[in-house]
Structure formats: structure tokens, C-alpha cells
Length: 399
Image (cartoon, rainbow, N blue to C red; front, side, top):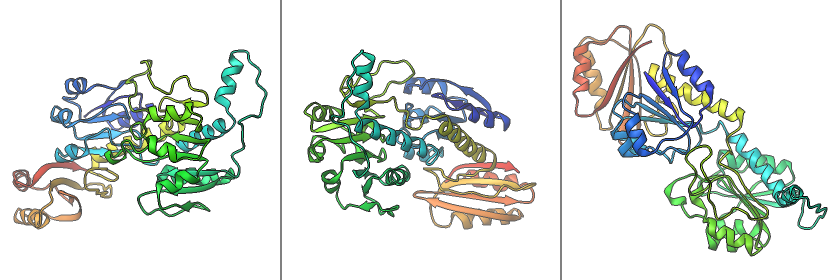
């Protein structure tokens, strides 16, 4: 089974996959849609990060593909509905780089508060500017977190330890950590925060979330951080607010358009501005995070390919059947209609097959059932299931 890993995925993933018998090809850059279409025939599993986009057209051209692994948090670069319709499982690493992103944001907040970007640039140009003007401690200031998920909550915890007052806004119900306090509108958060940090996901509804209107509502001389998604922020509006002095600084790790590979030119309206930190989407790019992500997603590939496990899949029904020894396993992904499980068991019973365990889950329009038996199921029964109008795919394993 061939695995293609793009975008400098950690070597630990290669080690794990190869040790489990997979043929692995590792590439440093991303691929365009046309390049993917030309490359994917014969590839069973594809590993990507944030710069590779998997469209329905790409999936149509990849008949051998069974899984896509996003070696990152986000999955908005994959057409999840199209992948589910074709029975392609999509996995990600929702927790593995949380700490790395949070530490970057904390460092950026302190650097902006002390005007370090401006001061270090002057030093490199031979200018000694020993002044406290515009430099502040972060202790006692208010941090507003937009999006209180895994990253937002951990940022909340560390920020409190530094002496921040923390408020947050999220459209979902979230439990406040420590002394953090929920506010009920984004406008309220903007009016009260000395620092605003974005940690929202890449769903289409978040596109353009932050523009001229939102920046105008922020406190004068506040700071702005975006380590979420580039398409969330209007960078031109941010530039205007930096140049006018309404905002005292900003740090961005993500951009609406990002270079496809290492060394490509980077263009942004925010280049060249004082007290603006620009980093090349490295929030999760620590050795620790990338190693953990490589371990986690490669493990999901192995579990799916060798045991039929769809645990933490973001688009297929989740089934985590236990790993057994000496059992015969069938995984059956099907259209979610009433009576499918009863029909499966009737087919098996009619052919004298003895089921020892069964695990079922549904998600939306699909259902997935894993069936274990103590001896191989009859080919007659398997063929009948394959030919059902409800079948998306059927696979067998010997454990």
C-alpha cells in the first residue's frame, strides 16, 4: 500500500508507516490540483499540511485513495463532503500542536508590548534607542480571546499565569477556565480588550470575520494577533489601523494567500510596518509538535488500513473496534438507511457465518459497521453485501 506525504511531514511518520509495511514517498512541497491529479493514481493514503488543497476533482482522479491525513489541526483544505461521498476517510491532529501555537502567541504579545520588532530593527541598523516610550508590561492588561477551543483555552490558562485578565467570545457554549470570563458579543470583547487574539476555525462563515468595522471598535492602541486562518482578516484594513496609530501592533502567522513551497516569494500589505510581526505559518512548527503530529496521524493511517478503525475521522462515522488476534474482520461503509444492520446480519446468518462482535456508528448520510468473526466469512455473503445498492465500500482484514 503506497503512502504519499507532502509538505515536510516529520520523519517519525515515515518510520511508523514503513515499519508497518507501507511504501512511503516523502516530498518537501505541496502540489497543485493538476499535479495531484497526475500523481495520486496508485496512492492509497495521502498526507498533507495546510498548503495542499484536496478538491472533489482531485478525489475523482484518485480511485485508489482510501484516506487523507491532515498533519495539522485544520481540515478546511479538504472537501470533506466529497471525501465522505467517495468513502475516503480524513484524519487530523486536533490537539498535537496546541502548546506550540499558544507559546508563539504569548511570545508575540510580550514582544509587541515591549515594541521589540521596532527596537531590534533599529539595533541592526546601528541605532541605539534606549527608551520606555510605548513599552508596557502585560500584567494587569485584558486579553480578549475570540474562539475558546483547544488553543483558546490553553492560551487563557497561560495568560492568567502572566497576570492577564482574560475574557473570551465563542459562538459555542464553552466552560471558562480559571478566572476567565465569557462576554456575550464580539463587540463587547473588542471594546474591553488591550489584546485581541483570534483562534477560530476555517469554516466558510468565518471568512472576513475581521475587517474595518471590527478594527474600529477595538480600544485605541490595542494589539491584534491572528494565528487562526488567513481568510478571517482583512489585511488591508489592518494595515490602515496600524498606520493610523489606532492599533499599537499586530502579529500574524497566517495569510489569505500563502506561498506553496519553501523559498517562494511572500507578498503582503503588512510588510515593512513597525511593530508588526509576520511569521510564515509556523504556529505549530516546533520539533515537538511536528513529531507528535507525525506520530498521531500516522497511527490513524495504520489503524484504518490494518484494522478498519475510523476513530477521530472528521468525515466518516467513528468506529474504534478493539484490536484482536486471530479474528476475521469486515468493514462495511454504507448509506445510512433503516434496516441495513439487520440486512447484514440476515445475509450472514443465511450463509452460516458466526459473528463474534459488531460495532456500528452513523454520521449524517453514512453508516459504518465493523463485524468480527472467528473464521472467514463466506464469499457468497460478502459478494451479496458488495452488490447492495447501499454499499459504499466493503473491506476485509485478518487480525
